Length: 454
Image (cartoon, rainbow, N blue to C red; front, side, top):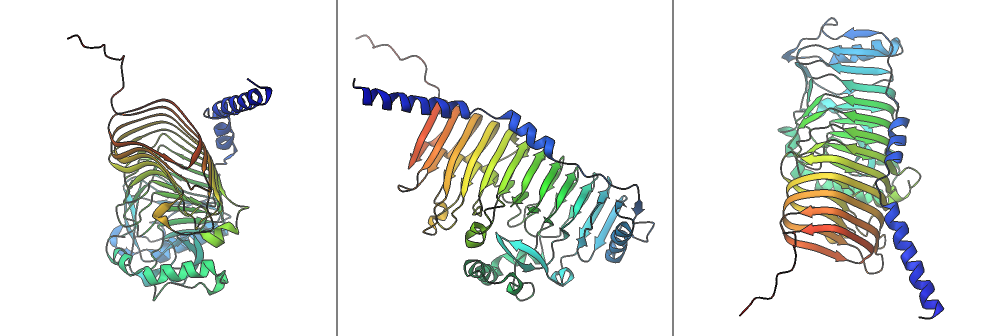
């Protein structure tokens, strides 16, 4: 063996060992992120909406009462708005101010109207990765600090009637928003609302910091349920869902930083958690604010997909940690990383461990060619680590990795994975440095059989 060959062999061995060591789940990093997140603290001022004149009879419009409660909190530099037992109809959005906790008590339900005109005037928001002006989200906070939605009550978005009809009519608005994204149209000119059919999010926090959403139930959203947009220091815990309309993603962190999602019971008509970071040209212009430092743990998944990254991720997604989660029902895909040649950006430093899946279509799926769309802006996907994952059945594929010949996916580790049944076991194309250890798809092989005797 010549010296040059020996040197190359040692270099390859060293790189593989280093990558293997770095693929261990970084618990210390997770602890650091969680410890950096601040739980909001509120002034002692409280206001009970019933004492202000609200009626929980499911009929009376309480919009003005909730607006007054929020104004009183603003006057007192913050406080807690108490929503007692009852069904409170609100014909229009709730707009937060800073230092406010909206506490929806057990047996209380806030039920929003489904008249689109109630959600005018337009507000600054985002729609599928493009910043624009649209109908107000049903609960909306813009540039607020220290805000919360807590309690054991329910928020009902009434999304299954009028809003649901918008889906088949959204094409013109969706296409225009994407054209404005690609041509860098001034944001002040991106005005939608009436005449278009872009549904509003149920809850959106925009440019906010120190957020808590805890123990509430979310039902029947018009569009995405909980959108964490350009916000940071966020805790989402103990909430539950029953929201099965079109595009009812559970939680969408977008350009979000320092996020903890834990002990959530999902039941959604779309992705449970979908991590995003802007779309196409606009996203690539915002690389200073990727989605990063996101911890997802101890959750029960049910819906379309469990945890998704993309496909709107053009500013980049990094440092995502998923652990100790399981399914409570069918998922189309368990963990799904998706991008295409329109997006650019990157997905890196993704760690997933201790996941129990029941029946899925595909168990683990990484693709750089989502829908086969686009050209010129291929994404970087690297340093993705899966360990201790079980799945009872994949009706299609166990594990899929799809890169491009000229932009390969790099550094993928698959360790201690058992998929008991799969139509297709493993599809791995255009990927470099894929390490597989203790991976079983189908029946585990035992000792080889002996030669039969004649």
